[in-house]
Image (cartoon, rainbow over all chains, first blue to last red; front, side):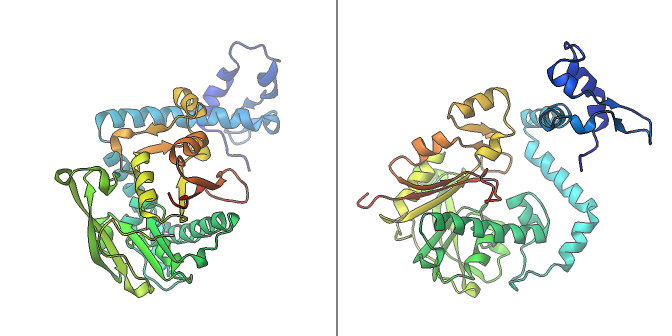
Length: 254
Length: 103
């Protein structure tokens, strides 16, 4: 079902034809009229003939992107964008009673506890347990399919180094760990830089640390000791995995 | 920032081992406009919100050419799966790389 054009869209759509005659190219094909008849907010005329590309582009550009970009750029210039968006997301989550209820009832099919919602939000940008869990399963299936395309079976890998948090590496969020648990891979290394994840990871204990730059995205080897802190490596004993414990000089990952 | 990371991954993976990376690419490019879109189409890396590097508010869009010519440099490209492929319901492009034997 086609979404109802917003009030702003209704205002902007006639203007899209400015400078064109009534029967030229895109304008003639988009000759619908916004009307307040039949319920007051209807779009009558040739709505079904409204080309998708025109409608979607107009909606995206005129209705969504410009105001959002403007607000985003303003907040970014002021240096408060992360805080502002974080507050917005949290307020939305607080007001979203359905999601909170579903989270309370949700039990992960694999039997493992779910990480706290605020950590899930840090990784994937929402607070929904079920969506997070399903997303992890889907991502793992996706990665396995990519490997399979190249003739590599995930289960045949001797060891895995899962690097980075967003795609499911850290014990704290557990997207990757949960999936690896169901495979025959015996050795899984997970590197996580999240202190919050460390403190809330059931069954995960620190086994070592690495030097890492204060910039969260810089590899450990490319900064001097004076600019570095420690990166944490965890061992998830309850998942039947072992972990590297030592330095970044360890190799042997396939 | 991508270069030091891929160099580090290359360093810790044994010869013949695989590196599977996913990057924001074709799907991320759909929200680009103007100069950013032009840079993307020219094969250049597009960084949005660079001031917030390391946070979710920093987004980096990788053209296929950039991954092949820069990130996969000195590595063997085993497979490239764009997110746009209908059988893969995913929002990031995936690249499977291999560290050359004896490399």
